Structures are given as C-alpha cells and as structure tokens.
Length: 249
Ligand code: COA
Image 1 (tube, rainbow, N blue to C red):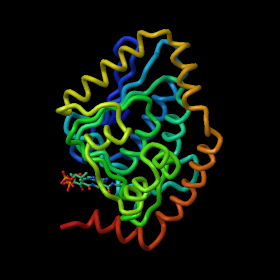
Image 2: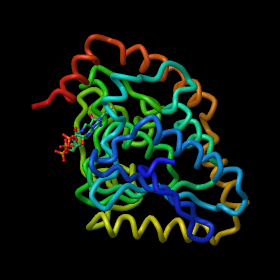
Image 3: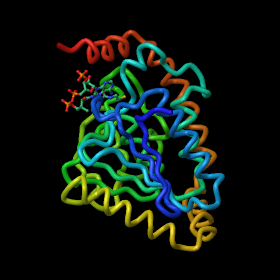
Image 4: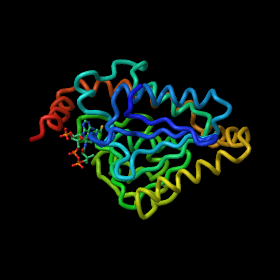
C-alpha cells in the first residue's frame, strides 16, 4: 500500500492523513484509490464512528496531481478520482477535515462534503479550475453558491480567486479558524473524538437528514460536472495550462 496516505485508528476514529509532502500532498490515482477503499471500509465497519481527514500542519493538498491529469486523466465514472468522490459523498459516518496551508482544487471542493471543517487562519484555499481550462467538479457548482452565495461563488469559481482560512470560517465554509496548522488538526481531532463518543446511530441518522435535501439533484450535478470535466481535461486550453505548470522553470 502507498505510504502517501497514512491510515490510523484511534478508538472509534479512523484518521486518513495525506502524506506526500514533497509534492504538497498532490493527489495521485493511487492515493484516490486508497482513500476510496478506506472510506468504504469505514462506512461498512460498525466500530468506526467518525473519519478524520488531514494533511500535514503545513499543507492540506495542492489538489489533483497535474502530471496524472496529463498522463492518465480520468476517462469515466470508474476512474479513481470519481470513486473517491463517491465514497466521500456516500459515507454515512461523519467526516471531519483539518486544513492547514494550501487546499487547492479538489482540496477545497471536497470540504463541501465534509461535516465539520477546521482550518488554520492562514490556510490558502483556491479553486483555479477555469484558470486551468477546467470546470468545477464534485458538486461545487451547486454547493458553493448555497454556502457562500452566488456572487461570491462566481468570484471563487470563475475568477479562481484564492481566500484565507479566516475568510473560509467567516463565509461558512469552515466551522472555525485556528491560529496554527497544529491547532487546526488538534481541534479537528477533538471534534472527531466527540462525535465518536456520541450515540453512533443517532449521529448517522442526523447526518443523513442534514444531507438529504437536494441529494438526488446533487448526484446528478456531480455526474454532469464529471463528464464535462473529462472533456475539458482534453481541451487545448487545459493541456496548455497543465503543461505550463509541469514545465515551469
Ligand atoms: N501536481 C503535481 N505536482 C505538484 C502539484 C500538483 N498539483 N502541486 C505541487 N507540486 C509539486 C511541484 O511541482 C514541486 O515539485 P518539484 O519539487 O519536483 O519541483 C513540489 O510539488 C513543490 O511545489 P511548489 O510549487 O514548489 O511549492 P510552493 O510552496 O511554491 O507552492 C502551491 C505550493 C500549492 C501553491 C503550488 O505548488 C501550486 O500552485 N500547485 C498546483 C496547484 C493546482 O493547480 N492544482 C490543481 C488544481 S485542479
């Protein structure tokens, strides 16, 4: 199994830590597959009551590995990135995320599917899909506007403006902004342990109710976005932008 994801159990909490620090935790196909399997196992295992998703105290993730996007782009809904997305979307257990440093692309959009999110004040979140010739994924074209409002969603998704952890908390994308990455991870760990000690069936039923409104629409939006994303990855605009990053001096 890849060392790029550390899977650990602490009581009833399953912790998934992104651990490819030399590449700013850029997510490879293999990492998505490990994450998808871990979420599916967590969902099936009654002894897991909560999942904690973290990067390091310096970096959450720089998003999809750009080399992978160029060399082995997703081709259909069975591609590792989409399997990971589905496993997070369908996870019945509460998911807590801890974000420090960069959270780019899918690193920001996946937060829309977590139940509790803790960030460091100086975290740098960004969804530069359009800037890279791509389009929003993972339900962000629907969910982001619901959370931050349509004009701010346009700023973040069309202009690709970055924002801080402090702003993420102000805008309702995160529960709290903590002074450091270490503090954000600690706060997220505490929250996951609190969830793990609550009556498990009541937590899961309540999560299902919170997520239920608009669920069918969300699944459809994700599928539509995914097919468009696959097309856009093959567009000359995207190939030029992604190659530009890989060939940087
Ligand atoms: N895919 C592949 N490699 C990546 C990567 C990614 N998404 N993000 C970073 N890396 C690699 C860099 O190429 C570099 O590799 P090298 O040491 O072999 O040259 C290494 O990780 C460190 O990244 P670097 O850019 O030097 O770090 P930084 O601190 O200056 O900047 C980021 C951090 C996250 C701002 C910057 O790496 C970045 O913008 N990454 C791309 C983000 C992105 O567009 N993601 C896709 C969204 S769809």
